Length: 311
Ligand code: BT5
Image 1 (cartoon, rainbow, N blue to C red):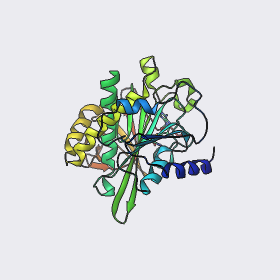
Image 2: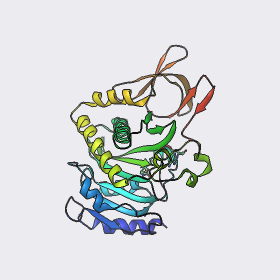
Image 3: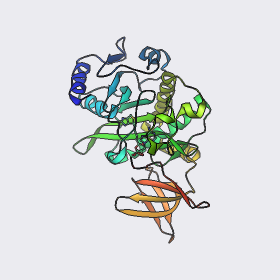
């Protein structure tokens, strides 16, 4: 597995029509064959997808470095809004701040390309919108009550089942595109995870006791994400924030935030209209957090919950 085969794949994909027609998904085998289960069936996605824009074009890879990276390259090449890049596995899956994302076969790893009319500094809103869409999907489809940990984690029973990574392409002062990458631990066994993640991660398979259709999960998530994105595009981000507040289970928690070089501690009070986390510090002052690692401190037991273990 190397980047040159990946780049060769991209050239081939770039040379094909990837629009919502019969060549909907371009199946391009960059590297290994799927070794477990059946693999995702793009034809099933096409059958069940009920969106206008999101997922109406897509590229499916059996294995690639990172769906976000490929989506960025396609976006720079003018790919239409809503195009998804989907992979059976990633060999350099990315988290935030250069962290790694464990993404073997069996998960749902994909990125959506968006062209929102926003300033680059508002990209946090897309992450929040994505997490609301994931929680709604897990509730409707699987009956799971998941929670959101600001800014980008979705948790089941306090363990991370999904991470979201938003990245941007900027031209001058403007946002040219945004890539919203979703990593959902779907049909994976916890035993397959590296040891250091086994206490902080979970999977849908572990929680439900059975595998689920990743095609249906993807379609449902794209539908929920499109509803949220439409609200966002029509200036109704407040409605997303209200949903976030209801669904997160996070506000009111005692938190420690590692914000660059600084560490602050206090109560997670609310989100402001841009989605920044408002923390009331011990001295009563209020601090806004735009990015950073958040650790929820469980006071009763004096233990800590942190989904961002260092790999
Ligand atoms: C995230 O970063 O949670 C964002 C993850 C986004 C992954 C998707 S997959 C499709 C798209 N393509 C990509 O290359 N990425 C996106 P962060 O908040 O920085 O969390 C990363 C941390 O989560 C790591 O340092 C580990 O501690 C932990 N981790 C890694 N893999 C995990 C997994 N599969 N499940 C749960 N936790 C994991």
